[in-house]
Amino acid sequence: MNQLPKASLPDTWEWNNIYGKDFTTMVRNQHIPNYCGSCWAFCATSALSDRIKIRRGAKWPDVNISPQVLLSCDTTLGDLGCAGGDMINAFQWIHENNITDESCSSYQALGWTNGLGCDAEAKCKNCQPSGKCWAQTGAHIYGVESYGRVEGEEAMMNEIYQRGPITCGVAVT
Figure 1 (cartoon, rainbow, N blue to C red):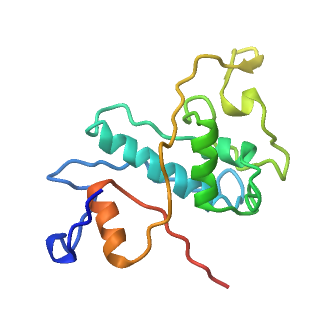
Figure 2 (tube, rainbow, N blue to C red):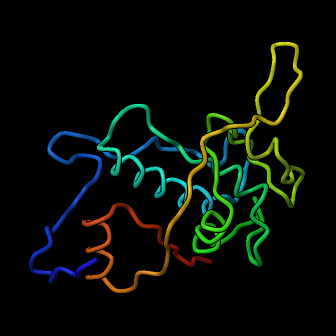
């Protein structure tokens, strides 16, 4: 990506209103159905979902990447399901393993550290009215070709303007 000089970038760029069209996906609440420290998984999957929507020209239906797959399956050092994690690790995990969307792995606010480990059903599941469930085969999978850190105001502005939303971490006490 060619870096544009800051003077060439707009002062604001909001992907939820580009000439009247919304290129962002749904807003989520990580604490329903119960408290879960999954912000790292939500921001990674939301940024990826938004970038997919941007690449698809905001065509319906939206693809909402599943944060639940990360909570259950990403056991990268530092990623602890509902006890926190890191967005870069999430992108690395998606790059190495691919991920499904919420149509077959809905959010349950549990992770590998508190009762919902990784198996084929955690990645994609379907159920009958009788309650019998099974791992769904042939699901749509999504990946990340490249990922990395973006540092500095001008670089972040370029990334957002030219490619889409980014993830940011804020350390608080």
